[in-house]
Structure formats: structure tokens, C-alpha cells
Image 1 (cartoon, rainbow, N blue to C red):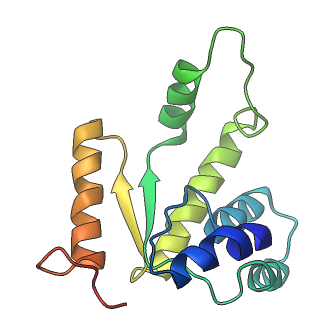
Image 2: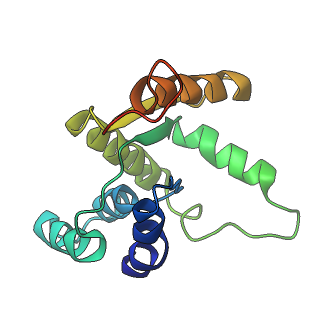
Length: 146
């Protein structure tokens, strides 16, 4: 994460650009929380060391039951491809992971928005667009002051 922030995120933001990322510090927090064994204080210290003051303006959490997510992953996987290490985890791990992301969203509703990913793809895309419009763009479609 340090390299990602230093080499890509910080320079892009300094130039006034937008950065979209499919994973950031919340993923580390959720996965370590779901796996257990890492103290919250240690996760906080590692996050501060890795990301500094860089935090997302908006985090979208695409939520669906673990069984649905695993079925979708299996459908995308090629015939000769095996499951990855996270897909191979027990279902309890996936339920804990989902709950960890929902807990993050509940603790930081100003930044996080939970999107129902069980809906059709077009509906999910429209929900994402609506959140972006409401939280990041002003009425004229310009970037809102953060």
C-alpha cells in the first residue's frame, strides 16, 4: 500500500486527478478482522504507516450474501482454474468478512455507502452513479468541494 500511495495515488491527487481503487485500507482491516489474530491497534498502526493521511472521499461496498458471491466467482472461473485462497475459505470466514465491511460502513457513513449487489447489474450501476452524483459532484456535474 505504501508504494501504491507514493507512486500512484498521491501524485495523481496532487495533479487534481481522481483515483479509483478496487481495494484499499478497508480491505486490509476487514480481511485481518475476519481472519482474526491481528490486534486492532496493530492494524491501525500499519494503516497509518502505509497510507498516511490518504483516505478515500467515498467508499462503495458492494454487498451480497457470501453464497451468492462465491457462486458468481465460480461461474467466472475457467474450467481448469482452481479456487483462490480466499474462495477456498470456509463459509463462516466469508460471513465474518461481509460483516466486517458492513461494520466499517456503519462506523463511517459519511465516507461509506453500501450498495445492494444482489440487484441486476444495470440497477447496481445506476445506484453507484447516484451515490457518486450525490456525494462527489455538485448540481452542475462538477467535482464538489471535499
